[in-house]
Image (cartoon, rainbow, N blue to C red; front, side, top):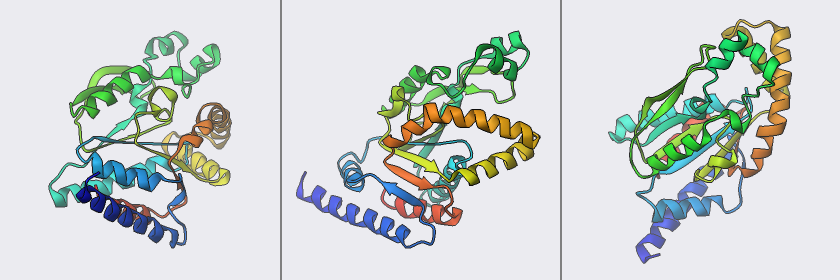
Length: 266
């Protein structure tokens, strides 16, 4: 590392530390946990690999707040992009890599029947096209654009190949239950896990089920139990690979502020 690089690295590290120290003083800090040495490694990468495409993976259990966290970050980054007239970030949902199960749904008549008859688990790694997602992420890392599949959330189980254009950008953010799975986990420079306590997660899940899916409380509770069992098998073990754990109780305004502070150094 040259003298200039060392100076840039030290200044960047100092600035990143100040952002984290500021967060610690909040009534409800956004960051619950950070891996030891993480800030140092980030500062080194941003100094020595300035032109590299950086990948951020975000996961968490259903109703943990990960989608809200991601939407908040993206909205703030878009505002900053407009001010700087510079593209900083693009986004990929791992949910678009679900396998096409449309023929199975036709066979059984509904998604719920498929779950009953074949013991299909949508959270399992084999339910995703992870080899394709890995290939697409590598293409983006080469600063090339890709067309990714689109998984329809209309109950048909259809996956439409080469449907959504994703342009390469300095930062590629990916969110979903699959991003920490072994087939793609190593591609992410920063791995973020969002979590809240069980009581709030259940409350959020039931509310969302009623408002968005018109489900009864009884049906929502039954589905939540199934999702929880699946999370114990597939998702919670991935928590150990997180560089950062985000508090799902955090205020949106505080998340926005962290996004703005950190974007100054990208």
